[in-house]
Length: 299
Length: 117
Image (cartoon, rainbow over all chains, first blue to last red; front, side):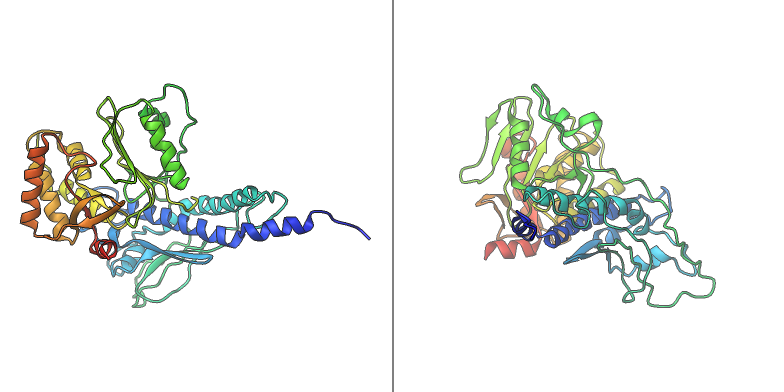
Protein backbone atom coordinates (compact mmCIF):
# COMPACT_ATOMS: atom_id res chain seq x y z
CA UNK A 1 0.00 0.00 0.00
CA UNK A 2 1.27 3.43 -0.87
CA UNK A 3 0.23 6.29 1.36
CA UNK A 4 -0.10 9.69 -0.26
CA UNK A 5 -0.14 12.30 2.41
CA UNK A 6 -1.76 15.67 1.92
CA UNK A 7 -3.68 14.66 -1.19
CA UNK A 8 -7.05 15.30 0.42
CA UNK A 9 -5.87 18.69 1.58
CA UNK A 10 -4.66 19.65 -1.89
CA UNK A 11 -7.96 18.55 -3.40
CA UNK A 12 -9.88 20.55 -0.84
CA UNK A 13 -7.82 23.62 -1.61
CA UNK A 14 -8.34 23.15 -5.32
CA UNK A 15 -12.07 22.96 -4.78
CA UNK A 16 -11.96 26.05 -2.59
CA UNK A 17 -9.96 27.92 -5.21
CA UNK A 18 -12.84 27.47 -7.68
CA UNK A 19 -10.77 27.77 -10.90
CA UNK A 20 -13.91 27.93 -13.05
CA UNK A 21 -15.33 30.78 -11.03
CA UNK A 22 -12.01 32.60 -11.11
CA UNK A 23 -11.79 32.15 -14.87
CA UNK A 24 -15.32 33.46 -15.28
CA UNK A 25 -14.55 36.52 -13.20
CA UNK A 26 -11.31 37.18 -15.05
CA UNK A 27 -13.02 36.66 -18.38
CA UNK A 28 -15.65 39.22 -17.44
CA UNK A 29 -12.93 41.69 -16.55
CA UNK A 30 -11.16 41.07 -19.83
CA UNK A 31 -14.39 41.53 -21.76
CA UNK A 32 -14.84 44.86 -20.01
CA UNK A 33 -11.32 45.90 -21.02
CA UNK A 34 -11.82 44.67 -24.57
CA UNK A 35 -15.00 46.74 -24.85
CA UNK A 36 -13.03 49.77 -23.69
CA UNK A 37 -10.44 49.06 -26.38
CA UNK A 38 -13.12 48.89 -29.05
CA UNK A 39 -14.61 52.15 -27.83
CA UNK A 40 -11.17 53.75 -27.98
CA UNK A 41 -10.76 52.59 -31.55
CA UNK A 42 -14.15 54.05 -32.44
CA UNK A 43 -13.01 57.46 -31.23
CA UNK A 44 -11.18 58.12 -34.51
CA UNK A 45 -12.13 61.60 -35.61
CA UNK A 46 -13.27 62.33 -39.17
CA UNK A 47 -10.28 63.15 -41.31
CA UNK A 48 -8.03 60.62 -39.62
CA UNK A 49 -7.17 57.12 -40.73
CA UNK A 50 -10.24 55.53 -42.26
CA UNK A 51 -9.39 51.86 -41.86
CA UNK A 52 -12.02 51.89 -39.13
CA UNK A 53 -15.24 53.90 -38.76
CA UNK A 54 -14.95 57.59 -38.10
CA UNK A 55 -16.67 58.90 -35.07
CA UNK A 56 -19.74 60.77 -36.25
CA UNK A 57 -22.61 60.85 -33.76
CA UNK A 58 -20.85 58.66 -31.22
CA UNK A 59 -23.81 56.24 -31.23
CA UNK A 60 -21.78 53.28 -32.45
CA UNK A 61 -19.07 53.97 -29.90
CA UNK A 62 -21.62 54.35 -27.13
CA UNK A 63 -23.34 51.11 -28.12
CA UNK A 64 -20.31 48.93 -27.41
CA UNK A 65 -20.86 46.72 -24.43
CA UNK A 66 -20.17 43.29 -23.06
CA UNK A 67 -22.17 40.41 -21.63
CA UNK A 68 -20.65 37.62 -19.60
CA UNK A 69 -22.09 34.26 -18.69
CA UNK A 70 -19.91 31.67 -17.09
CA UNK A 71 -16.93 30.88 -19.25
CA UNK A 72 -18.19 32.84 -22.20
CA UNK A 73 -18.35 36.56 -22.80
CA UNK A 74 -19.34 38.65 -25.76
CA UNK A 75 -18.14 42.10 -26.64
CA UNK A 76 -20.05 43.84 -29.34
CA UNK A 77 -22.83 46.06 -30.51
CA UNK A 78 -26.40 45.70 -31.64
CA UNK A 79 -26.25 49.07 -33.38
CA UNK A 80 -27.56 48.68 -36.94
CA UNK A 81 -24.36 50.25 -38.27
CA UNK A 82 -22.09 47.73 -36.56
CA UNK A 83 -22.20 44.78 -38.94
CA UNK A 84 -22.14 46.87 -42.15
CA UNK A 85 -19.10 48.78 -40.87
CA UNK A 86 -17.30 45.67 -39.70
CA UNK A 87 -17.99 43.55 -42.76
CA UNK A 88 -18.56 46.10 -45.47
CA UNK A 89 -21.40 46.34 -47.96
CA UNK A 90 -21.71 46.57 -51.70
CA UNK A 91 -20.96 50.25 -51.54
CA UNK A 92 -18.85 50.62 -48.43
CA UNK A 93 -15.57 48.80 -47.83
CA UNK A 94 -15.13 46.93 -44.54
CA UNK A 95 -13.93 49.17 -41.75
CA UNK A 96 -13.44 46.64 -38.97
CA UNK A 97 -13.37 47.88 -35.42
CA UNK A 98 -13.84 44.57 -33.58
CA UNK A 99 -11.39 42.37 -35.44
CA UNK A 100 -8.33 44.60 -34.89
CA UNK A 101 -8.94 44.77 -31.16
CA UNK A 102 -9.56 41.03 -30.93
CA UNK A 103 -6.35 40.38 -32.85
CA UNK A 104 -4.30 42.77 -30.76
CA UNK A 105 -5.70 41.73 -27.41
CA UNK A 106 -6.34 38.01 -27.85
CA UNK A 107 -3.09 36.70 -26.45
CA UNK A 108 -3.07 39.18 -23.58
CA UNK A 109 -6.63 38.28 -22.68
CA UNK A 110 -5.83 34.60 -22.46
CA UNK A 111 -2.69 35.25 -20.44
CA UNK A 112 -4.61 37.45 -18.04
CA UNK A 113 -7.23 34.76 -17.48
CA UNK A 114 -4.55 32.13 -16.95
CA UNK A 115 -2.65 34.41 -14.60
CA UNK A 116 -5.78 35.07 -12.55
CA UNK A 117 -6.30 31.37 -12.06
CA UNK A 118 -2.68 30.82 -11.16
CA UNK A 119 -2.78 33.67 -8.69
CA UNK A 120 -5.91 32.33 -7.07
CA UNK A 121 -4.42 28.90 -6.71
CA UNK A 122 -1.31 30.35 -5.14
CA UNK A 123 -3.44 32.41 -2.76
CA UNK A 124 -5.14 29.22 -1.69
CA UNK A 125 -1.83 27.55 -1.10
CA UNK A 126 -2.42 24.99 -3.82
CA UNK A 127 0.67 25.55 -5.84
CA UNK A 128 0.69 21.88 -6.67
CA UNK A 129 -2.59 22.26 -8.48
CA UNK A 130 -2.68 22.71 -12.20
CA UNK A 131 -5.50 23.77 -14.44
CA UNK A 132 -5.85 25.80 -17.59
CA UNK A 133 -3.24 28.48 -17.46
CA UNK A 134 -2.16 27.75 -13.92
CA UNK A 135 1.27 26.54 -14.95
CA UNK A 136 1.98 29.75 -16.81
CA UNK A 137 0.80 28.37 -20.12
CA UNK A 138 -2.00 30.55 -21.38
CA UNK A 139 -5.24 28.96 -22.53
CA UNK A 140 -5.31 28.15 -26.20
CA UNK A 141 -6.43 31.03 -28.35
CA UNK A 142 -8.29 30.45 -31.52
CA UNK A 143 -9.46 33.20 -33.81
CA UNK A 144 -12.12 32.57 -36.34
CA UNK A 145 -15.46 33.53 -37.71
CA UNK A 146 -18.86 32.08 -37.24
CA UNK A 147 -22.39 33.17 -37.85
CA UNK A 148 -24.67 34.32 -35.10
CA UNK A 149 -28.05 35.93 -35.10
CA UNK A 150 -28.33 38.51 -37.81
CA UNK A 151 -28.05 42.15 -37.04
CA UNK A 152 -25.46 42.00 -34.31
CA UNK A 153 -21.71 41.99 -34.35
CA UNK A 154 -19.45 40.88 -31.61
CA UNK A 155 -16.35 39.27 -30.25
CA UNK A 156 -16.97 36.04 -28.42
CA UNK A 157 -14.55 35.17 -25.68
CA UNK A 158 -14.33 31.65 -24.44
CA UNK A 159 -11.75 29.39 -22.93
CA UNK A 160 -10.39 29.27 -26.41
CA UNK A 161 -10.85 32.87 -27.38
CA UNK A 162 -12.65 33.44 -30.61
CA UNK A 163 -13.89 36.50 -32.17
CA UNK A 164 -17.12 35.88 -33.78
CA UNK A 165 -18.61 38.11 -36.35
CA UNK A 166 -22.26 38.11 -37.07
CA UNK A 167 -23.28 38.19 -40.64
CA UNK A 168 -25.45 40.98 -41.83
CA UNK A 169 -29.15 40.29 -42.03
CA UNK A 170 -29.00 40.44 -45.81
CA UNK A 171 -26.57 38.15 -47.56
CA UNK A 172 -23.73 40.11 -49.13
CA UNK A 173 -24.54 41.07 -52.66
CA UNK A 174 -22.43 40.17 -55.67
CA UNK A 175 -19.43 42.39 -55.63
CA UNK A 176 -19.19 42.30 -51.88
CA UNK A 177 -15.59 42.22 -50.91
CA UNK A 178 -14.87 39.01 -49.06
CA UNK A 179 -13.77 39.57 -45.53
CA UNK A 180 -10.15 39.06 -44.74
CA UNK A 181 -9.51 35.86 -42.89
CA UNK A 182 -6.60 37.44 -41.08
CA UNK A 183 -7.79 40.38 -39.07
CA UNK A 184 -5.99 43.58 -40.01
CA UNK A 185 -3.85 45.14 -37.33
CA UNK A 186 -5.40 48.07 -35.59
CA UNK A 187 -3.64 50.57 -33.40
CA UNK A 188 -1.60 48.93 -30.71
CA UNK A 189 -3.46 48.55 -27.43
CA UNK A 190 -1.24 49.73 -24.64
CA UNK A 191 -0.59 47.05 -22.05
CA UNK A 192 -1.59 47.76 -18.48
CA UNK A 193 1.00 49.82 -16.66
CA UNK A 194 1.41 48.71 -13.02
CA UNK A 195 1.75 51.12 -10.16
CA UNK A 196 5.44 51.59 -9.37
CA UNK A 197 6.77 50.28 -6.05
CA UNK A 198 6.43 52.86 -3.25
CA UNK A 199 9.46 55.09 -2.92
CA UNK A 200 10.39 57.69 -0.33
CA UNK A 201 9.68 61.20 -1.56
CA UNK A 202 7.74 60.11 -4.61
CA UNK A 203 5.47 62.67 -6.24
CA UNK A 204 1.91 62.03 -7.47
CA UNK A 205 3.16 62.37 -11.04
CA UNK A 206 5.80 59.69 -10.44
CA UNK A 207 3.16 57.42 -8.93
CA UNK A 208 0.52 57.87 -11.60
CA UNK A 209 2.75 58.25 -14.67
CA UNK A 210 5.85 56.12 -14.19
CA UNK A 211 8.12 56.63 -17.19
CA UNK A 212 5.51 59.00 -18.59
CA UNK A 213 2.92 56.24 -19.05
CA UNK A 214 -0.40 56.40 -17.26
CA UNK A 215 -0.89 53.55 -14.83
CA UNK A 216 -3.55 50.90 -15.34
CA UNK A 217 -5.65 50.28 -18.39
CA UNK A 218 -7.96 52.75 -20.09
CA UNK A 219 -11.58 52.77 -18.96
CA UNK A 220 -14.35 54.43 -20.91
CA UNK A 221 -11.82 57.05 -21.95
CA UNK A 222 -8.03 57.22 -21.80
CA UNK A 223 -7.99 59.49 -18.75
CA UNK A 224 -10.05 57.02 -16.73
CA UNK A 225 -7.80 54.19 -15.58
CA UNK A 226 -8.73 50.75 -14.34
CA UNK A 227 -6.45 48.94 -11.92
CA UNK A 228 -6.61 45.72 -9.92
CA UNK A 229 -6.81 45.61 -6.18
CA UNK A 230 -10.39 46.46 -5.25
CA UNK A 231 -11.05 48.60 -2.22
CA UNK A 232 -7.64 47.86 -0.71
CA UNK A 233 -5.93 49.05 -3.87
CA UNK A 234 -7.97 52.25 -3.91
CA UNK A 235 -7.21 53.01 -0.26
CA UNK A 236 -3.50 52.33 -0.72
CA UNK A 237 -3.29 54.62 -3.71
CA UNK A 238 -5.19 57.36 -1.88
CA UNK A 239 -2.75 57.08 1.03
CA UNK A 240 0.26 57.29 -1.34
CA UNK A 241 -1.09 60.36 -3.07
CA UNK A 242 -1.88 62.17 0.17
CA UNK A 243 1.02 61.13 2.37
CA UNK A 244 2.57 64.56 1.89
CA UNK A 245 -0.24 65.97 3.97
CA UNK A 246 -2.95 68.45 3.19
CA UNK A 247 -6.33 69.65 4.34
CA UNK A 248 -9.02 67.09 4.96
CA UNK A 249 -12.14 68.48 3.27
CA UNK A 250 -14.26 65.36 3.68
CA UNK A 251 -17.93 66.30 4.07
CA UNK A 252 -19.57 65.11 7.29
CA UNK A 253 -21.05 61.65 6.97
CA UNK A 254 -19.09 60.75 3.83
CA UNK A 255 -17.72 57.22 3.90
CA UNK A 256 -14.80 58.19 1.68
CA UNK A 257 -12.14 60.85 2.16
CA UNK A 258 -11.23 64.01 0.30
CA UNK A 259 -7.92 65.81 0.78
CA UNK A 260 -6.68 69.03 -0.75
CA UNK A 261 -2.88 68.85 -0.84
CA UNK A 262 -0.59 71.86 -0.36
CA UNK A 263 -0.04 72.19 -4.13
CA UNK A 264 -3.78 72.54 -4.73
CA UNK A 265 -4.42 68.97 -5.90
CA UNK A 266 -7.64 67.35 -4.75
CA UNK A 267 -7.80 63.60 -4.15
CA UNK A 268 -11.03 61.75 -3.38
CA UNK A 269 -11.32 58.16 -2.27
CA UNK A 270 -14.80 56.85 -3.00
CA UNK A 271 -15.69 53.46 -1.59
CA UNK A 272 -17.71 51.03 -3.63
CA UNK A 273 -21.30 52.14 -4.21
CA UNK A 274 -24.22 51.52 -6.51
CA UNK A 275 -22.66 54.02 -8.87
CA UNK A 276 -19.41 52.14 -9.31
CA UNK A 277 -16.39 50.32 -7.88
CA UNK A 278 -13.94 51.82 -5.39
CA UNK A 279 -12.54 54.86 -7.15
CA UNK A 280 -9.90 57.51 -6.59
CA UNK A 281 -10.83 60.80 -8.26
CA UNK A 282 -7.91 63.14 -8.86
CA UNK A 283 -7.39 66.72 -9.89
CA UNK A 284 -3.61 66.97 -10.09
CA UNK A 285 -1.72 69.46 -12.19
CA UNK A 286 0.33 67.71 -14.86
CA UNK A 287 -1.56 64.42 -14.60
CA UNK A 288 -4.00 63.69 -17.40
CA UNK A 289 -5.98 61.24 -15.32
CA UNK A 290 -9.41 61.92 -13.83
CA UNK A 291 -10.39 58.69 -12.16
CA UNK A 292 -8.69 55.47 -11.11
CA UNK A 293 -11.14 52.61 -10.69
CA UNK A 294 -10.45 49.49 -8.72
CA UNK A 295 -13.06 46.85 -9.55
CA UNK A 296 -13.00 43.84 -7.29
CA UNK A 297 -12.69 41.69 -10.40
CA UNK A 298 -9.10 40.65 -11.04
CA UNK A 299 -7.85 42.10 -14.32
CA UNK B 1 -8.97 81.99 -23.78
CA UNK B 2 -10.85 80.59 -26.78
CA UNK B 3 -14.18 78.84 -27.05
CA UNK B 4 -14.75 75.15 -27.66
CA UNK B 5 -14.93 74.03 -31.27
CA UNK B 6 -17.91 71.90 -32.23
CA UNK B 7 -15.87 68.66 -32.46
CA UNK B 8 -14.30 69.38 -29.05
CA UNK B 9 -17.71 70.06 -27.54
CA UNK B 10 -19.18 66.89 -29.02
CA UNK B 11 -16.20 64.83 -27.87
CA UNK B 12 -16.52 66.05 -24.30
CA UNK B 13 -20.26 65.40 -24.19
CA UNK B 14 -19.84 61.95 -25.72
CA UNK B 15 -17.03 61.00 -23.33
CA UNK B 16 -18.96 62.06 -20.25
CA UNK B 17 -22.18 60.46 -21.42
CA UNK B 18 -20.35 57.21 -22.07
CA UNK B 19 -18.70 57.40 -18.69
CA UNK B 20 -22.10 57.76 -17.04
CA UNK B 21 -22.74 54.16 -18.06
CA UNK B 22 -20.26 53.10 -15.39
CA UNK B 23 -20.19 55.87 -12.85
CA UNK B 24 -21.59 59.18 -11.74
CA UNK B 25 -19.97 62.20 -13.37
CA UNK B 26 -19.00 65.29 -11.43
CA UNK B 27 -19.20 68.88 -12.58
CA UNK B 28 -15.49 68.94 -11.77
CA UNK B 29 -14.95 66.56 -14.70
CA UNK B 30 -16.80 68.88 -17.05
CA UNK B 31 -14.62 71.71 -15.78
CA UNK B 32 -11.45 69.67 -16.23
CA UNK B 33 -12.21 68.52 -19.77
CA UNK B 34 -13.35 71.96 -20.89
CA UNK B 35 -10.36 73.58 -19.17
CA UNK B 36 -7.97 71.16 -20.88
CA UNK B 37 -9.22 72.46 -24.21
CA UNK B 38 -9.72 76.17 -23.66
CA UNK B 39 -7.70 77.00 -20.56
CA UNK B 40 -9.07 78.42 -17.35
CA UNK B 41 -10.76 81.77 -17.15
CA UNK B 42 -14.05 83.54 -16.73
CA UNK B 43 -15.63 82.19 -19.90
CA UNK B 44 -15.12 78.56 -18.87
CA UNK B 45 -18.36 78.67 -16.91
CA UNK B 46 -20.45 79.29 -20.02
CA UNK B 47 -18.81 76.41 -21.90
CA UNK B 48 -19.28 74.10 -18.93
CA UNK B 49 -22.97 74.99 -18.65
CA UNK B 50 -23.41 74.23 -22.35
CA UNK B 51 -21.91 70.78 -21.78
CA UNK B 52 -24.16 70.28 -18.75
CA UNK B 53 -27.24 71.17 -20.79
CA UNK B 54 -26.21 68.76 -23.54
CA UNK B 55 -25.75 65.96 -21.00
CA UNK B 56 -29.16 66.63 -19.50
CA UNK B 57 -30.73 66.77 -22.94
CA UNK B 58 -29.38 63.24 -23.43
CA UNK B 59 -31.09 62.14 -20.25
CA UNK B 60 -28.57 62.50 -17.43
CA UNK B 61 -29.93 63.81 -14.14
CA UNK B 62 -28.33 66.37 -11.85
CA UNK B 63 -27.87 65.50 -8.21
CA UNK B 64 -25.91 66.10 -5.05
CA UNK B 65 -22.33 64.82 -4.94
CA UNK B 66 -22.33 61.16 -3.83
CA UNK B 67 -21.23 61.86 -0.29
CA UNK B 68 -24.34 61.06 1.71
CA UNK B 69 -24.03 57.42 2.58
CA UNK B 70 -21.78 57.10 -0.44
CA UNK B 71 -24.69 57.24 -2.83
CA UNK B 72 -25.77 59.77 -5.41
CA UNK B 73 -29.24 61.28 -5.23
CA UNK B 74 -30.87 63.22 -8.06
CA UNK B 75 -32.35 66.61 -7.36
CA UNK B 76 -36.17 66.79 -7.36
CA UNK B 77 -36.14 69.56 -9.99
CA UNK B 78 -34.51 68.41 -13.25
CA UNK B 79 -35.52 71.40 -15.33
CA UNK B 80 -32.44 72.24 -17.38
CA UNK B 81 -32.79 75.97 -16.87
CA UNK B 82 -33.22 75.52 -13.13
CA UNK B 83 -30.12 73.33 -12.95
CA UNK B 84 -28.06 75.81 -15.00
CA UNK B 85 -29.15 78.72 -12.84
CA UNK B 86 -28.44 76.78 -9.67
CA UNK B 87 -24.96 75.80 -10.86
CA UNK B 88 -24.21 79.38 -11.85
CA UNK B 89 -25.34 80.70 -8.47
CA UNK B 90 -23.42 78.11 -6.46
CA UNK B 91 -20.33 78.52 -8.64
CA UNK B 92 -20.28 82.25 -7.99
CA UNK B 93 -20.84 81.69 -4.28
CA UNK B 94 -17.99 79.17 -4.28
CA UNK B 95 -15.52 81.78 -5.44
CA UNK B 96 -13.27 79.31 -7.25
CA UNK B 97 -13.43 76.79 -10.06
CA UNK B 98 -15.52 73.82 -8.90
CA UNK B 99 -13.50 70.83 -7.79
CA UNK B 100 -14.40 67.30 -6.78
CA UNK B 101 -16.65 67.97 -3.79
CA UNK B 102 -18.47 70.93 -5.30
CA UNK B 103 -22.03 71.66 -6.47
CA UNK B 104 -23.37 68.81 -8.63
CA UNK B 105 -22.76 65.35 -10.06
CA UNK B 106 -24.71 63.71 -12.87
CA UNK B 107 -26.05 60.20 -13.26
CA UNK B 108 -28.34 57.99 -15.31
CA UNK B 109 -32.03 57.90 -14.36
CA UNK B 110 -31.79 54.18 -13.56
CA UNK B 111 -29.13 54.92 -10.98
CA UNK B 112 -31.28 57.59 -9.38
CA UNK B 113 -34.25 55.27 -9.22
CA UNK B 114 -32.23 52.50 -7.61
CA UNK B 115 -30.57 54.73 -5.06
CA UNK B 116 -33.70 56.59 -4.05
CA UNK B 117 -35.63 53.46 -3.22
